Amino acid sequence: MAEFFQALFQHSFLQHALLAGLLVSVSCGIVGTYVVTRRITYLAGGIAHCVLGGMGFARYMQVVHEWTFFTPMFGAMLAALLAAFIIGWVNMKAKERIDTVISAFWGMGMAIGILFIAKTPGYGEDLMSYLFGNILLVSQKDLLAIAGLDLFIAATALLFHKQFVAVCFDEEFARLRGINTQFFYFLMLALTALTVVLMVSIVGIVMVIVMLTLPAAIAGRFCLRMGSMMALAAGLCAILTFGGLAISYDPDLPAGATIIVLTGVAYLISLLFKKR
Amino acid sequence: MNNPIQIDNLNFSYGPVSVLENAQLSLGEREFVSIVGPNGGGKTTLLKIILGLLEPQSGTVSVFGNVPAAGRKWIGYLAQYANLDAQFPVTALDVVLMGRLGKTRHLGFYTKTDRAAAHAMLERVGLGDLHKRPLNALSGGQKQRVLIARALVSEPKLLLLDEPTSSLDDYVEQELFDLLRELNKELTIVVVSHDVAYVSRYVEKVICVNRAVHTHPVCEIDENLIHDMYGAHVHAVRHDQEHG
Image (cartoon, each protein chain N blue to C red):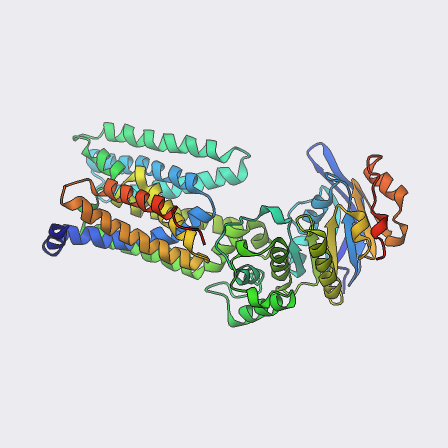
């Protein structure tokens, strides 16, 4: 671990990784609290897996058609927002079982991504980093994008805190009090989609759902209010990301997977403590 | 001032299933009435139409002279208690504050005025010192009072309660009705209940909903009426508790 701290001062890629982790933790705590209390874990998982379609498509366009501006992160954002909107809309309008609808998008999103990546010249190392994260490859430009999205998510959550709490707690009552609950439901899904995109660069598509639920779930065991739950979840997310990164550095473990295992262990330990 | 509720020739059906037929209902200010009827008879449907959550196929509904979606801002509503997440991280005060939505500003947190109103309302329902208590640490009766405070904090002129006593024991139930009687000095109250005999001790009128909607003064409630409404299966009516 000592080696990690030494390296931290020397290498800018580690500093970038750490900064990215800390920034993303803010969104992770806020949105994770919505996901857990509103019980849309599976929906968030579906959005996360659809992201592969967007990333694969973007990478393909970049390599094959030289759309250089169309970065995988940009593609991820489009895919996540689109998936959130479509799944939310189908859920609201069609009388289909929501988990069936999500499963359809979950699988299709991944399949489309794999098809595009298969047709993209190269060695397919992209696929691995999309699926399992590549926190050590966060560039300065990525950091700016992450900070921008982070700010947007935090500001939106702060400005509409009371509406979000009401919609999560009792949607029908909120509607009767004149709140446009459909708008806030979609806004919540959009924030979830953006957070998924942020997390993907750190832990990858497959494991996003862990960071989106477990820190908030741990916080929920000890917090009495939404606001404090968000703050504690964000703090936990930061500590776990930092911890996972530090532990993984010396033995050269994959950072994303280490963070996930550490988070899972923290959650299991939290179950041993008495609930509030 | 227009009547709190005025319903004329209302028809509602879910697909081919007719739920309310040619319903008629007129409710004056500061009345205290109960909506009774068998399960599946259309009580909750009627309530949802009044709240503008369901659109009737025909007929007119007016809430304080407006269409329901506009008039409902003067309604304080208490839904059936079962559908709230007991684990949700909110305190009693947080829940009551939600009733200020629509009255408070759009952006940012609740104002000082909102908080003062919420505290006052918790005081009013006898939970003034429990404002920091998490919702899941309150008893059934206390939770119900918190939800009533939430319904009242928007300063409604009509209070609608859907089966408010279904999860409460008799003693707490009586406390709740005493509170409602007190509140009735200022506002119109409608209580949905499946227990005709019990509510008839408190209310002035009983609205029987079983596809048709009929309004009866309490003095007309007798075995024949109950028999007509519920069919032959109901024998035990708690006359022994009447007019205690």
